[in-house]
Structures are given as structure tokens and as C-alpha cells.
Image 1 (cartoon, rainbow, N blue to C red):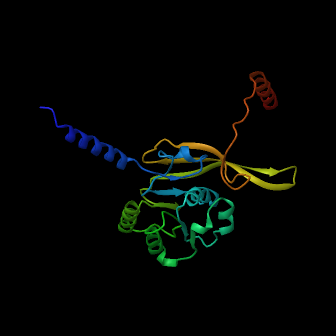
Image 2 (spheres, one colour):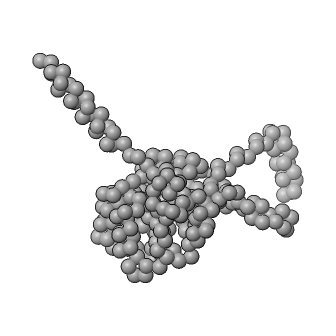
Image 3 (cartoon, one colour):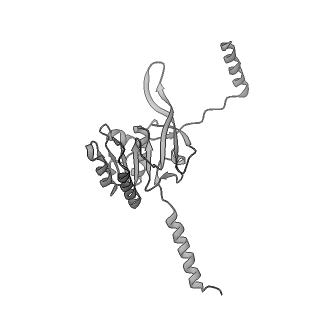
Length: 232
């Protein structure tokens, strides 16, 4: 027997609501880094570990703060607010707890109650029970934790590879930008994803690195022959 029209309508509405609730609204990152993340940004409730690179951390903090999310940095006494501002972090939505001492985990847990993005450089790895409590809090609040160091069961790990600085001439000039490969791998992305970016770029924010111009085949062959002749 056919279901009443009202029942069919309710089933359709429930299915639509379930699909909408299943969708994850990621916190934004710069376009140059978005392809590293399955959702195109930072997944709410997740923990990301990254190399102790200030420029990478700032690149991940900038877009959420510019989009209206409060960000905090814990346990980094050498962190520069000026560098953060030059990289695009909105200091009106930013807090710094430079040296919480032995109570660093309590500080992170308390801040994660109200701040959507928290970054920390932990002096050690907390106990499993402490990690479980903090992870549950992040999931409940939809927050993101960025860890400059090791952390068990992270959503993904970000590494910097093959850095090349530019700006110096023949023994003079100033460093203006650094080109690096940023790789991301994790439980949902076992095969690392990579992007080549300027980090920091000429104006602080990351910029997709230009692709090298293709070398004509004959020119490449001549270079190979010169290399072989030099070896011989």
C-alpha cells in the first residue's frame, strides 16, 4: 500500500536534514594550502600536528581569524604578535598565553571551551586519559587544535620539505620569500598530499609557487651531454 503523501514528505525532509548534518563545515585556510585537506580546510574537532615552523602556523591561523574565528597560541614565549599581524592574523581576535608552565594542558582545555582554534607547543606528551578528555571537548565545541610537536591520533601531520630562499643577489640584498613543499598525511589521507608554495610569501601570506618553465627537449639533451662530458 502506498504511503500517505505527508509521510513521504517527512521522510524526504529527514533525509535532507541528515545529509546537511553529516556535512562538515571546515574552517578556512589559504587557497594555496586548501588542497592539503580533504574538506578544503581545518576539520572541526580535529588535531593537526606540524613541524615547528612559525610561518606554517601563522598561515593556518590567518584565514580563520580573518573569517571571524578567535585564535589562541599557548606555550610559545618567542611568538611574535607583529609577525602574526604581518601574516594576516587579525589581532583583534587573537590571544597569547606565552608560558603557562606545568599547567599548559589546563590552559589549552580552558581556552578550547571558547576559542575555535588553539595552537600549542607542548613540553611533553600528556597521558592517554588527558588526550581523550581534550579530544572530546574539541569535538563537542567543534574546535581545532594545532600542535607544534608530537600528538597521538592526530587527524593529519604537516611537514615542510625542500626549502629554497630567494631575495639575495650576488652576496647582497635581503631575503624576501621562501619556497617550500608542504606535505600532509593522516588517517584519511595515507598517501601524502603536497603543494609547492612560497611560505612566507613576499607579503607574508602563502602564495602558490609558480611552476618551472618546461625545458625544450634539445636543450635538455645538450645539458645532459655536457654533464656526461664533465664526468668523463
